[in-house]
Image (tube, rainbow, N blue to C red; front, top):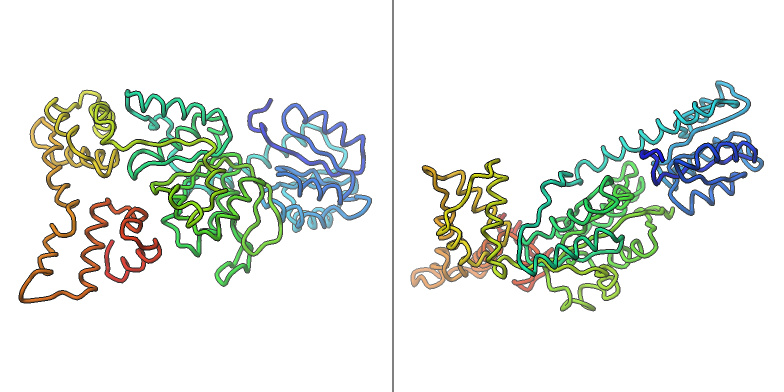
Length: 456
């Protein structure tokens, strides 16, 4: 099978049954072939599943072929239409191209000419897809996807990742911030059959509530004031690949129903649109929050159980200190591009005794800073831990809180709130979702207060 056509579908809409059979026999070994003999049958096929290429005849029993182009593209704007006719003319060709056709062939034609036209159409689809997902697609360097650790717990996690890679079922990854949930999601994707397709990562906590729906599902022209043209959403961009929904617990309740429907029905509808579009996307979700305590409150039970068909928990670094030397060696090799850069045993022991509230991400940051500021040959990240600890002290240890007990001045409640929010943000390494949860306020309220107090 031609690898570039694997998983692709072509629809032949032509009332000449012999022509359909000949073309079908020629193509069926390299791609899926659908046949329709009327315009109505053709539109039903487009509505039923994703079609990559349409071979469209001009003279159909119930309609002129070129008038169907806008409807075909409405079902899937990535579909490439190859227009064919036994009565070629310049006017017919112009009408076809203006209506949205990608190419034009005159009957009779050589099958190799058709083969070449299909190849060009598929290549155009791939190029368009690459251009549109560039801003969302994470680095596709599978060599960097390494989960380090030799303990029993990590061995069990690696087995679960292999199991998840062999399945198309939704996956829910839980764990504190910095434990490697994003890395686990990449390991699942690049270990699966969809490794050559898109891996799109979106942080639900980082998107304003007003934008999440349009980002995920796309929108039609005129759906809102600034929608001057139609736009595909992340579901459509991730077609055939993986959509990683990080911090899924922060998704607004009113969108959870639509997400559940998209996962179960494998169909979506753009914001402001009426067309139901089939999508084939694998969903991996992650959260650093305790979702089980939020079930029935801020998160739907049915969506939670649908997402957690496969459940993977990433343990915090403080629960696996024996893995720290191996993790340090791996990170240092990446930073220095040398396998000879190692920590002294006493340095490793100091790091193993630290609590690591920011987990592996914090460890990586400490090691990178240690390499940058090192003097001589020894790398001593433990010397930076005291400074890191100063930033993670409770609010009453902050120099700013001295104003609270200053007999000459009583600070305002607004100043106290600013100090407390700043201290909480520093303690939780800037994680908005965790900070909002610990402060007992919503994520949107926290973002508003950060802007109000000029905090980052």
